[in-house]
Image 1 (cartoon, one colour):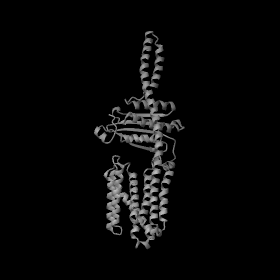
Image 2 (cartoon, one colour; image 1 turned 90 degrees about the vertical axis):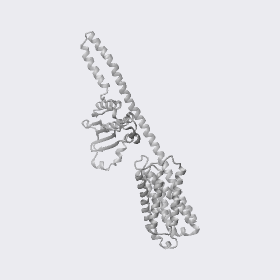
Image 3 (spheres, helix red, strand yellow; image 1 turned 135 degrees about the vertical axis):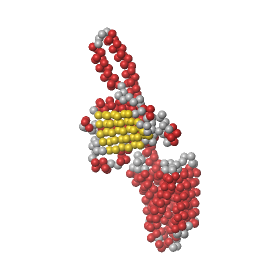
Length: 449
């Protein structure tokens, strides 16, 4: 009875380990499957595994190892269908899970068995259970490490969380291995210790979910801040578009007045006034009209505005724009995010340069039959080569608005990349131009044609 109850505890911990391992590699389970059915599947599969373990508990042979391994991998593969993934991904995750945990169990055996030689002969069945339980604790620590490693780009992750999440399982491991084996084998203490081990499992599960929920709350707060900043940014950019549109309407309206004035001057033979008036009018028009005219309102308004800003701030802005406005695969809203953020980043970097002759920004936009390319290159304050090597490459993906740019690029199946030199920062985004409606629907790309 004691062994059976101990195996039930191991079953609970096995289920928790597998679910946790799945969360490392799969984004989320299929929502259409009820949680009760989801949990029931794990219980049924784990019950079958325990039944198999009981049948071969005292058997030590290559057949036991092969059979147990096959059943374990197959059961994990079946449970992976609770998640959305490719067949190759399911196979890899199922096999890697059991290879990893098998290696940990092997280490546990090598660590424990030398100290249990005096009881193996009389308590061989308990040895399996004891080793299995301790390997589960080590596996839990291992999977937590994997989760932190694969989620290291999370904005909510920090050293405090990384440390906190390991405290409980490490303490549990220490408590477990320091429990005298003689006390465990003493029947008068077995059920008391069983309750103790059960509480350890519950404590680890509750601790993990509490910490995970705290992280989610922090993430939601940070996400809210990002959305607020993005809304402010979008409002600012739409104000720029509105100003550009109003300026164009103003030019059209004022041109009519200019022509009437010139007509009156000719009629009244006051031709000397025309030269000065035309010079003044041309200067006003140059300051208000769009310097870039591609047919795309976002590109025309933004780039024209940035040209005026660069001129006012003594920044050399070079443009090379060769696009077909009708084939740009990105919607205007998302194009605002891309061009606005990239140009703002460039201006912020260039403004820090004290030497006016070194303040340069180049923007290239072009389309062909297959792709739309955005290429922005700017100078920056020189960075020492040795310091550059120490910078985590991931840091270049967390600048002002860069997360929004990357998310927008992913939305249209684009490729974002950045390159650095001592005094240069360069960004290239390539968007495929896919006109096939059915293919765009399959790839979940928003329509813009």
